[in-house]
Length: 265
Image (cartoon, rainbow, N blue to C red):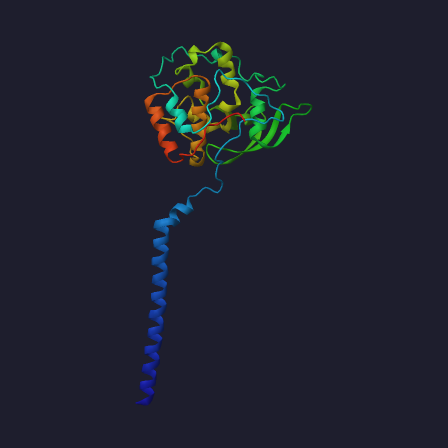
């Protein structure tokens, strides 16, 4: 009888241990599920490389400033937005890129064309073509619009991987006041480093001539700077915004009320 009782107690102890293990495993599963459905699933899709929150404008070491019709207002971007005129779009059927002059001129007269100036400004580990101190042949870009690292290699096809985006698209500018600018002022607008960012080719093509109401960078960290830069360009060249565009800009700036305008310096 005593042997049977001892066996019974051992069996009960083993059963309690088994149930304890099962309980611990169940708790771990529940905790893992809670983590996944709260923070875990979002952490899993977080990009390995995040894009920058801003893009430089000017490097006084080798770039020279250009002069827009008006100075960029200093201070809060939201306040500058309120100073822009609000109107509808003008007709765009007569838009022609040539109205902004020949593409990629040496507008600042530093000896290098604007495309190479912007590549040199925005790329890292820049390599130049043999015998040239201007022609960028290679480099890496911490791409601001989609948050990827892009390798630039000059070539008939590979150069398209990195394109120079007009922050305020020229087609958009044409419909919002640029028709009233002089040919020289439009040429400066098209080559102003304030209005130019090296970007992923596909993102640039996707944006096309969109304004902030219809396109914003996928990299949300850049959006405040991007919108402030558009406002700064429009203020400097006397361009207006549409009401939907202004509303979209205001929504972005509401998340960063301390955002300042972007100036060449």
